[in-house]
Image (cartoon, rainbow, N blue to C red):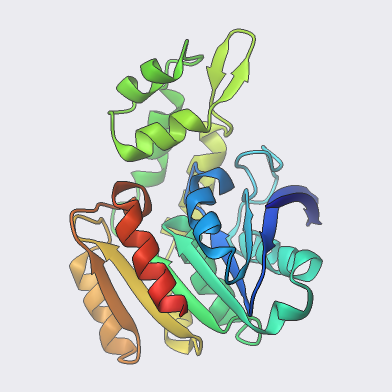
Length: 265
């Protein structure tokens, strides 16, 4: 995978791209993640597909404190990356997103149907929800991290010892005084707040790209939301990964990769 930097709406996006084959797969990580989290997914695909993964605004090595964290801005970033790196495959794009990245993929497919051929949403829903305090509580939790961490093991223990904890620890930035997250808590709260602001049922209904919902058996997207999504669009495929939670790509990576490669085949 080669690296590149793409400008979009006043921010710089750190991208990885490579691979060969027909069509283009764009990988979109979730909140507080980075393209590195999806590196195993990218590596599993590059033998048969062109692949792009990028740090979304406010994350990783992309602009850390963007002034705009609206849903429109995140979608515009996807288009900017496609225009800069997509080449001849921009008409044959598969968007694969997890969590907030799935929400970005959903809106991109709804607002720009000519740019998206295939949509794979891992633990992604339409947004909204009754818990209006969630973004602020999540931001408060990120701000509570006792940074800098002295080492990765300490970080994993504090963050709960889970697969996502290990991924966050691997993604920490090494500075002279220790390990720091590559995001700011207040930006994360604002970014997820835009997702939680309202449910995007109208956008979901107008998507024309072939779509698959992939969930972990212990995932966090409410059953009633998924049921309504499937009822509104009976053409949508639905796959459940056993023994996996919200971060199914990390909890059960082999099952996730098998699922995704089969879908793309």
